[in-house]
Image: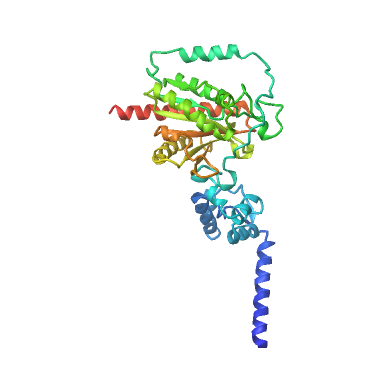
Length: 369
């Protein structure tokens, strides 16, 4: 009995010493993140191999560091002490089931920095008109009507905005919190207009929706959660009147903060983008394939600008369709976040126009062979 008690005591002491050594270790580990995607797991494995073969360190990014103790805790419990979300999703039953999942991860994208939907303000009528926008609207109308010889005859791309008033701190300086970054004039629609203009400059006739979805909902006393019902009506009408449309984009902005929505390319700051795919309809796989191609094209020409592709299933907390059942190449694009500047957003819109037009003309060439 004494011998058994002694062995048990020694075992407990050994475990305590080992745990203490891990917890207070000053050894730094870079990539042991078991909550990440397949790429992060590959990098974790390479890091462990590099402890024996130091030549492998040349292919590893060493910017992100954490203690071996933190990594051990995360490995054993799936809890990251620097991110409370990992504790919540582990401990609250059912939370994982309603959490968006990453289908294709861009650089730096994991569960902890998925897109965030900010709640709207209680009243969309609290802004004061700061200037007359009639001249701007007239310019947009003239641009829409202008045709060129090298422009496709009929619209091939359709851009609309389910959450019309989503805006940014840079456009609404008076906003202090995320649910104040909404505006009737200075909002995501400005990026849609710019994207349409850039695509037309590249020869692709593009229809940019100018109907105010939020105003339509207000007229009908609809709730914000019914936004996709209202935008569906508008999108269906546009697609029925323009049978030649091949690509459909619903543009949004994320409520995530700047560290998740910003990147630097060749010394210039860009807003990052994420593609959202609803899985609540039969041909979501075709939308996914389309999003993947755009993600890959962005990766080649503008590395790190794409956060990847995230899916949202249909459940009580998610629409899960997002009108993507209306076309086989229809996706939601989150452009930047509430902190991004207009310069960053415009650079990203121009990059999107570049790769979308490249994709379109590549597909057009394939269909004529």
